Image 1 (cartoon, rainbow, N blue to C red):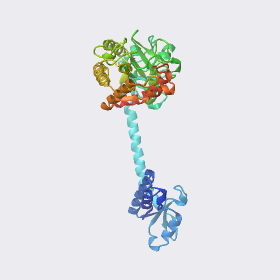
Image 2: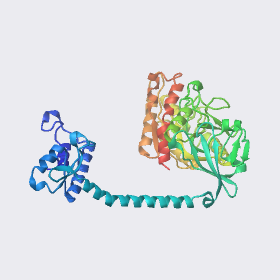
Image 3: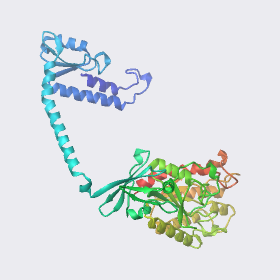
Image 4: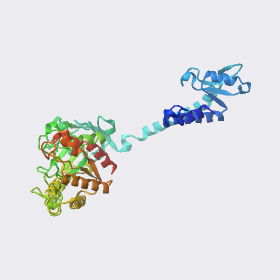
Amino acid sequence: MTQGTDQLIQAFRDYVVDGIPSTGEHEPVKADIRTAANLMGLEIAAAQAGIQIVATVADMTAFYATVSNRDQLVYVNNNNGSASDAANGVYEYVGGARIAEGFYAGVASVVQPLVDEVQDNADLVADAVDGMVTADTLGIEETIDIPLKGYPQHLVLIKDESDRSRVVRMVADDPEASNYPGASTTAATLASLIETGGGITGGVVGDKYVLSASALDNAMPGCFLVWFVALSQSQSTTSGGNAALAPTIPAGMAFQFLRSSDRLVDLSSDADGAWRASYMPAWALAAYEATGLPSIFINRAVGGSAQLDAAESSNGSWGVGGTLRASYETFYDAAMAYLDAQKINYIAAGTIMTNFEREATAFDELTVGVDAAAAKAALLANMTWHDGVVGELPYFHVRLGRESTGDTAGYAAMRAVQEEIAAENRGRVHLIHINALNFPSEGWMDDNVHWSQAGKNDVGLAGKPSALIALGAR
C-alpha cells in the first residue's frame, strides 16, 4: 500500500466513520478522490525516478533505518501535516539523512534551459504581434471612444480609411456585458447607432466624435433584445398598474415602440407616453441582469381581446374572424421599419403571451362554442399566423391566474390548455411564469380581475430566464 492508495480507499469507505455501520453510508467526496489520484500519480512518477515518498521526517528516518534503502532518495511531502512545512523536500543518505541539494541542482540544470527557451519564444511572438497588429495593418486611422450615460458606459468605435465608423464593443460597468454586435455607418450619420429621440448633435473634432450634453443625456446603445407582445390581454399586464411602484431602471435599459408617433420611448419614466405601469420595466431589468442587453418592447397587447372568435367581446379577437390580426401586422411593419431606418441592431428574442381570460369568462358563462378544445385549437392557429409575421421565435407564456373571489372551472380549464400547449411544444413554448394563481392570496390584485403593480413586477422576473432561453435558441 502507498499513501495514495490508502487515501483512495478512505475516500471510498463504506460508512461515514470507517468500520461503523451505524454512522450511515458514506457518499464519496470528489475532492478527496482527486487528492488521492494526484498523490498516486506523484507516487508513480517517483517510483519511475527511484524516489520513495513518505509523509513525515519520522517516516523518512524509519525508511533509512533499513540499510538496503540508503541508496534511494526519499521525498517528504507532508511533515507536521503541512504541505508547506520547512522540512519537506527530497532527502539522500550520506552518513545520515540530508537534503539532496545535488538532486535539486541537477533538476534545475535540465529544467531551467527549457523555461528560458519558452520565455524567449514568448517574447519573440509578442514582438512579432506588436509589429503586425498596427493601425496601418488593420486599416484603421483612429479609435473613437464615446462616453454614454446609462447602459453601457461607452461605445468604442474605429474609423477606417473610408471615414466609416464601426462599433467594435460597448463597455458597461459589468465586464461580462462588454461585447455587443456592431454596425457600420459613416461618421456623418452616427445617429444610426445612437438614437436620441430629438436628433443627435455633435461631430468629429480631431480624433474624437464629440456629442452635446443633451445627446449624452439621451444616448442609448445600438443593440437590443426585441420582445413582441402579442396574442395577449389577460388582466392588464402591460398597462393599468402604478408606475411609481415599478422598479427603477436607468435610462437606456428599456424602450417601448409607440405607433402613434413611430418612435421609441424610454421606460425609465412614465413621461412621453411610456407604459411604465406594466411588467415591462421589471422584465427588462431582469433580462439585462442576465445578459447585459437592453430591451425594446413591440407591445400590441389588447385588453379584453380573445383568442377564440366565439369568446370575443367588444375588444376584438386574434382569430381569423377577428379584427386584431390586420392591425397587428401594420403595427409590426411600422416598428420594424423604424428599427431598420435607425440601423438599430437587435436580437428578436421572442413573443410574450398573456391570454385566455376572455375564454375563461366565456366558458363559465356557458357561451356556445367555447370549451378547452376550441380554445387550444384557436391559440395554436393564432401562433401559426404570428410565426408567419415575425418568424418562428420562442413563445414565453404567462399562465393565467384567477379572480380575487376564487377560482372557476373556466380559469382552471384555460390554465390546463396553456400547460398542454407548453408540454406538447417543448423548446418552442415556455410556460415562463406560473405564480399568478397565487396573486389574490399575496394581495397583488387591484380588483377582482386586474393584477396590481406588485403582480406585474413578479411577472417581470420571468425576463431573466426568457432572455437566457432566447439567446440560447439562436
